[in-house]
Image (tube, rainbow, N blue to C red; front, side, top):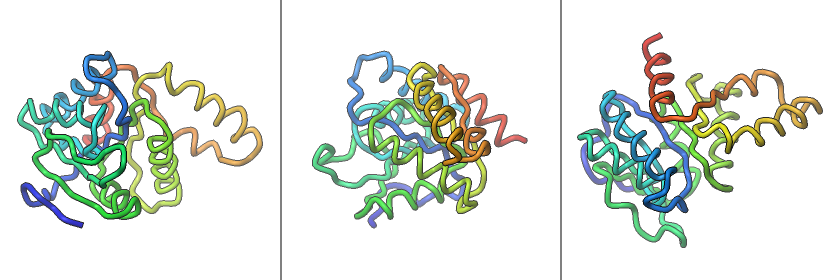
Length: 191
C-alpha cells in the first residue's frame, strides 16, 4: 500500500460506495458532487474508491468546498488511473486491503446506486457491522427508488426464509437527497 497527500488524519470520515459508471452531467452525478460538498462543509472527510463516476463526483464536491477528499484506490482495468479530485490518495494492491482501509476510517457509510462492486461493498459492510468486526455506524442508502427493490427482496426472501435476521434489515436507512444523508450522519455522530 502506498500513500500520497497529507498524513492520515486522526478523525475518520464518511465512506461513500458508488458506481464508476455514473456519467458527468447526470442527476446522479450532481447529487454525488453535492454530497461531497456537504460532507466537507460539515467537517467530514469524503472517502471513496478514488475512481471515476460517482466516486469522482463526491471527491470533486469535497475538494471544491475545501474538505478532505480521500481516494482509496486500486488499479483496475476499468479504472486505470485515480480521479484527479483527491487531496489524499491511498493506493492498495488488493480488494482485501482496500476494504480494510475503508472500514478503519468509517464513521458512516453512504451507498449510492451502483453495480456488483457496490453491492459487494454494501453486503460486506453489513456483515462487518452485524458480526461486530467494526463499530455500529449509519449505513445510508441514497436514492430510495433504486434501493427499494433490493430491500424488498431482502425482506420477502432472505428474512422470510431465515437467511438473515431482523437486525440486518434495521441497519439500513434510506434517503433521497444529500441533505438528508448528511443530517443523519451528523445526528449519529452527535448522539
